[in-house]
Image 1: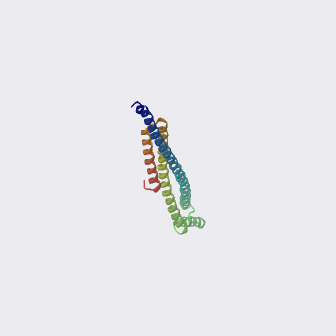
Image 2: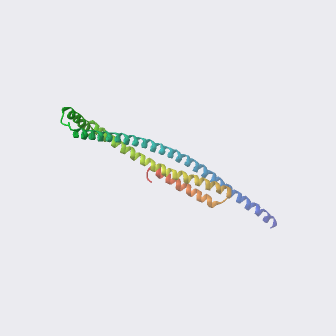
Image 3: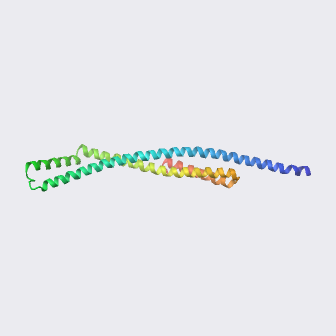
Length: 189
């Protein structure tokens, strides 16, 4: 009986060590998986940010061109009004200048320039939609990356402190973050 009792602490210590090793192995595998997911989502975040910035530049350029055209049209209308209000507005030279301004104004309203403006507005709207989707995706992936980073810290702290609750919380946070990131990337969330 005494011999059995003397081996009992060793057996429980060996079982405890084996259980701890299993948990540590699980934590190591989870940390590697979380780090791989983190790297993937960070690449997606960079891609979304690049798309956002590219489309923002396209939208800004198109808006600048449209503002330039609007300013030009306003100046032509103002020039036409000024010429019409001159005391010698009935003279052939002034009438020719007024006609030239009207012809330019009409060029903005119909024909190829008007089609070009419509096309530019359509392209600007498409770029704006892509930009907005990329911004939403980038914000969602930022949250995903933050969640995975926090999960890695929790699981690493669990290894040091031997707290199983931290492993559970970290693993759950990693799963939720990865699922949210996948939904964001797929465009569902």
